[in-house]
Amino acid sequence: MTPSATNFYTHNQYQDLLSLKRGSIDTNSSVSGYESGAESHDGAKSAKEMIGAALQKHIENVDPHDCEAGAEDAFFVADLGEVYRQHIRWKRNLPRVTPHYAVKCNPDPAVLSLLAKLGAGFDCASKTEIEQVLAIGVDTSRIIYAQPCKTKSYLRYTAKQGVTQMTFDNTDELYKIKELFPTAELYLRIFTDDSASLCRLSQKFGASMDNTQELLALAKELDLNVAGVAFHVGSGASDPSAFRQAVRDARTVFDQAAVLGHELHTLDCGGGFVSETFDDMAAVLSDALEEHFPPHIRIIAEPGRYYTSSAFTLACNVIARRTVADKQSGGDNKYMLYMNDGVYGNFSSIIFDHQNPIPRVLRSRLRSDAFNYTPGSPLDSGYTSAEEDNNVTVFGGKKQVTYSIWGPTCDGIDCISSDWSSSETLDVGDWLYFEEMGAYTKCSATRFNGFTDKHETIYVCSEPSAAALIEL
Ligand SMILES: Cc1ncc(COP(=O)(O)O)c(C=O)c1O
Image (cartoon, rainbow, N blue to C red; front, side, top):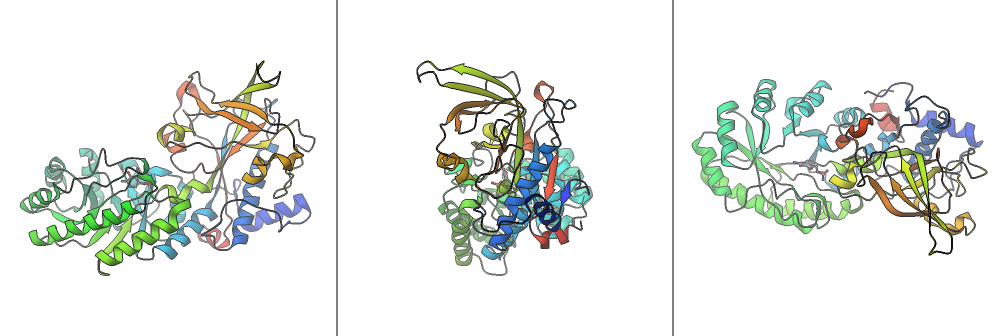
């Protein structure tokens, strides 16, 4: 889906909307997150307001107690301004490294278009991903087919399209490439220490340093074109030294290749970058690159979650509630809340990506000001910042209510949070929202139990420069 006029709001349109709603924009209100990398802090501040206003506007138009089937479905608000800010931050911290966005992380068409306009390349893992990127006019030279074990028919497809750059890590793959695409530009993916990452990839991919010599020699014998080395330190990496060691190992492979007569020109540093630790990771990576790779070597990377995680917010509706009498705690009730999205849907990140999404209250009908949202105010009825939501005193020291939160399917593993508390007493029809839902979420959603995997995305753009690029 491309952004349409009806669901895409620019910075200025949102400022107008906010002015209408609030009389004026409160520039002093506190806002959490978006600390670094922003074009300006004000940009980040208005981002929160814009997202809040978009969430609010959508739910105002839906009455879960009297709507068409599915009108209360979960939905995303995506801030393309945040993707833009991450790109600017990347360029500031890693000016030598050309990002090739890992499409698998979130193939959202507006994100891909924006990144294409910003000059990024793309890491594709399948024919569909390559097709999607080619369809938006990206040149084949900006695509790397970063899949060391490729489907034969996809390899024939890439040969036909002229997508030449691809990874390999084993001898069988070299014979396959010799048969189907002998002129491809090959990147030897090497094993890394990914023990400090959320999703370990080296269990499955990456040639061990004991095998690299043999692989390079076979490639030479087969007259194949080895153009570089690739690595991935694991998705959601937390130890910057993994990058340092991987760059050192890559240097060793470059040297081995030179002895065998290969002329390597590119190093691909993979993904693994996390927004919170990016500056430290980038500093370590930059130093290692400077130490081991002279400036004529082209450096690329394949960041995924770094770009999209914080750009997407998900809102879900409470579809059912069960009261659980808790005799031990002096008669206080606990509640089981059932939402219309779960681990078989956009919360697939809990299972596949080891995430713990944090619920926040978007709208609670029981609050007297429930329909009078004023973004940015500490007394918002709904869309509140992290500190506000966790700080009970903000709500007058109200007692906390305890919940477990579940998805809509019949499966017991469909649990979003086994223990969450809020000062709000929530009930059917209320809305929760979850920040940081842009990576490995909707791309791995299923239709289990007949629930949809196509949730609406409302786009906002908190950076005017980005809005101009995507021609609204
Ligand atoms: C080959 C490859 N490149 C890049 C990525 C993106 O990783 P991340 O989202 O951690 O940046 C992945 C993730 O699985 C991957 O397998």
